[in-house]
Length: 150
Image (tube, rainbow, N blue to C red; front, side, top):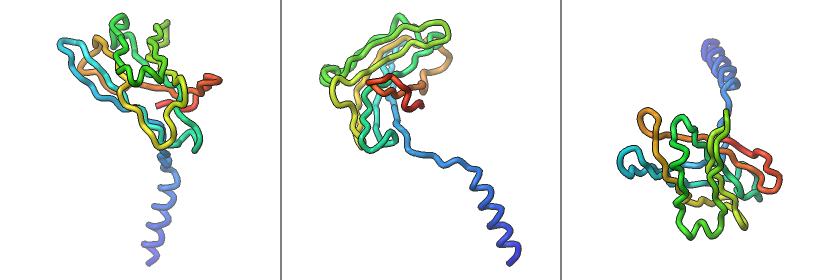
């Protein structure tokens, strides 16, 4: 019995050092080959409430490393139905700063418990293998303060 208690205590101490994964805003993507090194990435932004129960996602950026993506090839191809509610732009890279796909809601944004799919960018891939996961940042659209990264 003493061994069971000791094992339980050791397991409890071990678990206390394991970080708890909290919900976070997610930006997932679907990748479509357009032939050769050309691709279309279609993004889905999901607001799970990690910013607060009343906080919509109203501004986000997705990074495009110029060592992996031919920056001049970046082109926004989001459907008109989404473009009607979002201002989108490709922001040029600078030394040490990647190019960014930037989307700002013109009204409302993405409320808690909702997702918007269809944000889309075409590009030429110059990196090894296939394009993969990209870093993103969620901002406060009024102050431009970083709210979350992923």
